[in-house]
Length: 455
Image (cartoon, rainbow, N blue to C red; front, side, top):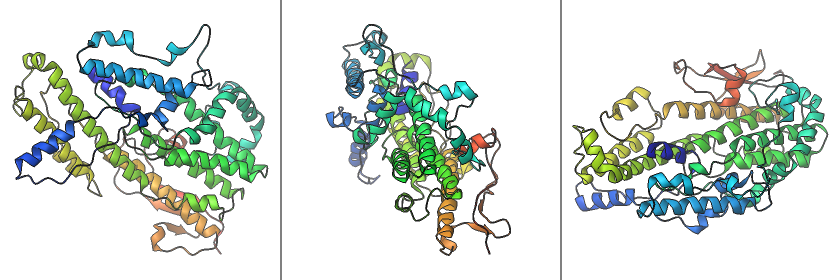
């Protein structure tokens, strides 16, 4: 049960990781101090409950105007339960009776707000913005034809839409808390509604720009970009969501450029594509490192809580489970090996497996996720963005050069990037907007964008 709760905690909780001094391996006292700092988790600062995307998402579905405050109360309440667990005031089995859910704040016949997807009911299609898939032809025309249904969705989801449109005022970073006893799986953000609201915003942007309302359309695209660009300290789930949001946004921008509904010289595009093109690679590496640290911390706490029982269940030749110090050092060193692997610019999956072997026979899980597949998603996203940036240069009449990292097919008037890494079948390598278009195909050998006829 404890492991399951921890895995759920990893989904949306975030934590500002400590910065550690370089350690001389020959100085035992310095090493021990670093290990102690590694396992030390500070109490939840009140400031972490401000400008907080996690809390905004937890409260999003609450029907009354104080939804953010309710999200804050839920997070605080569940965190305090964790403190009671840590201090032995509360038993594990009593938690379910005390955990706070958003439903607990409903009064009488109040119901939670959910995104009402009438659009799906009318035409059987889940997506609203049909320009958010790779190489999707005629999507602008289809979106304009769906205008009445999109407007109906705006009316039907007005309250949630207003909350979504105001979140840049409430959230400027993705930070929160992590503690091995915080049990925040009870407070699960309404991510489904959020994704639908982003999808609706992008479709509305297409309609606004097609009707000549440039300012409103750009405001919508900027809001989507804001969410995709939020700084993050925490688990992998959010950076992967951001990567897919950015990929869908880029594909929508590509369609708008094709229809001349966006000017390639628009200041919004200039600002957007000043971002580091490797940003998602950096985010994913940081999140994988954070998850690894949190996993090692949690494993040690589980070991400490259940040490007596664990010793009766299993022993392992690699660690003396009776020696708590050795267990802590073993988990710490396993993390440091993982951290060193993540520092490599080009990761080879086979070399990674050799550096991070599976450890059998332990009563706690120390398997850490292979970074290869996730970094390949970032590589695809980067490739598409490089293509789009190069396309904008062409539309502005600027010459391409080697720094653009793209190939030009003058006969077919396309820019392209080939992938030849020998990808393995079945690996989830493509960002979701690309994968959807290809009906379940897990990877593509080439990405491309169209450009005006080259003379």
